[in-house]
Length: 68
Image (tube, rainbow, N blue to C red; front, side, top):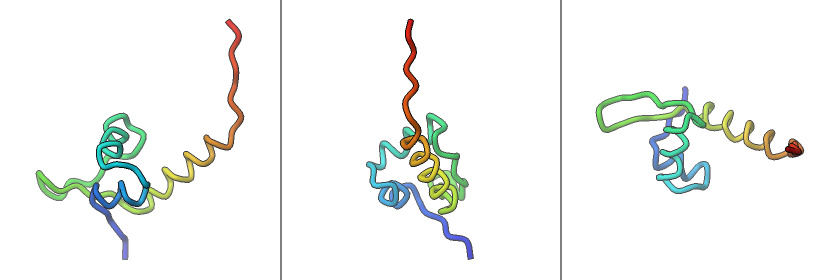
């Protein structure tokens, strides 16, 4: 059975404020959720896990400096 979370619990899962979570969705960092009704949106737990893995990968990559 697939597991889905509402925004409040997604934010808790990611250890951020709910506002930050919504900003990330708006910015396209996190996939848009599934709209169940005008006031209810859910996200698949696998999408959140993919987001966490991607962030860990980005954090482990060395920063590239540019000289202008």
